[in-house]
Image (cartoon, rainbow, N blue to C red; front, side, top):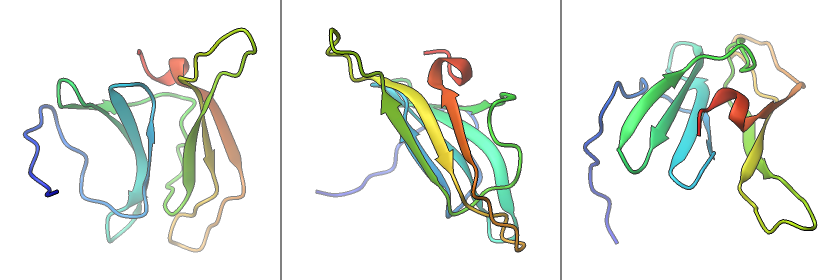
Length: 117
């Protein structure tokens, strides 16, 4: 087991810590927010693991306040007659702006509203 660099397309997100990532399909994941060493961030990026391409996402449903150190996870659709467990919703909870503001809100988004899968 060893790590190796990945040649990527598109504009990679800026370096950051205290961000969250969530798988939104079989071939892509999102990262949102975080901290760049100077400030909390508000941006969202999606990475396609097949094309190895980063894409910046902007959508009115995504949190606009700077957010670092929070939780983000996906929830599958749960239907008795369906065996489909693919992610359908994205939940974002908590975090802060690293300036003293902490959030206790929960943001719930439909993945299809923010990502064209």
